[in-house]
Amino acid sequence: MHSIIKKIHYLSLVILFSFVSTHISAVELTQEEVDGIDFQLHGIALFGGTDVFSSSIKVLTKSPFSHIGIIVHDASGNIDDETSWYCFESTGSAGEVLKRNPPHVRVTPWADVCQDYGGSITTRLLTFEEGSEPDGKVLTDYIRATNGRIYETKIFELVKSLMNWNKQAGPDALFCSELAAETFMQLGYMERGEDGDGLANNWLPAEFSVAQGSGLSLQGATLGDELYIKTYRLGRFVRLSLWLRKHLSCRGGGAATA
Image 1 (tube, rainbow, N blue to C red):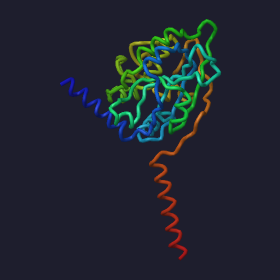
Image 2: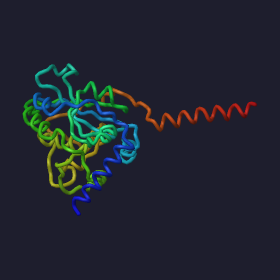
Image 3: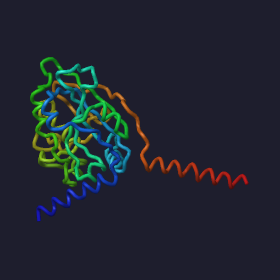
Image 4: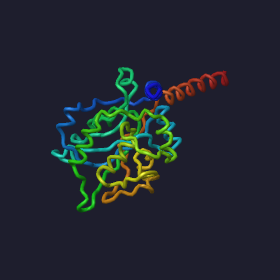
């Protein structure tokens, strides 16, 4: 019975990503490539999707953001060189699902993410207090261990996160803001607890934004202002609606003047 329930949860997630996600996944790093890089923490990326799923999240959370990723960089490179940046996130795309590759945690070159994502992208870079610089080994070990881990398949856990109702951690599968919060907890910048904000799976992308981040108190680090990297690219349904409105109004106007 338990296996049947798990399959139902997974099937619902597959259907969700197959029919409503417009996220186009860039080429992620292989596990071998991830294992060959020492990572360092740099900031967060807040995404505003244009598909139905993303739009629903934005409406429910009253925020322009529907997804979050962690910006990391190659510790051996120049931090100011964005070619050394990567996005550590839990996500998926319809194309991947159709190829039997379910949504999961991955590391993707930052430039590819910026180029391929169909919505808006906003960054908030981190500054660290003296003596509170991130432990690169802890971060690297966590990224390597979680890379490839499946996206959360328990729909009810996702729903309960909207109300801060999750009562226990679920680290075996991770949704995007859960991964972000867990990363900060692993590094000691967020306090871990037994309920409420102390659980990574009770955090939402919106709560990492300036507008709704009043409850986010990082210890030894500060998230900077929001920097807009990419604006919206209109979604399929929006483009279709605008096209229909334009052409129908033109026809109506023509009839009226005849």
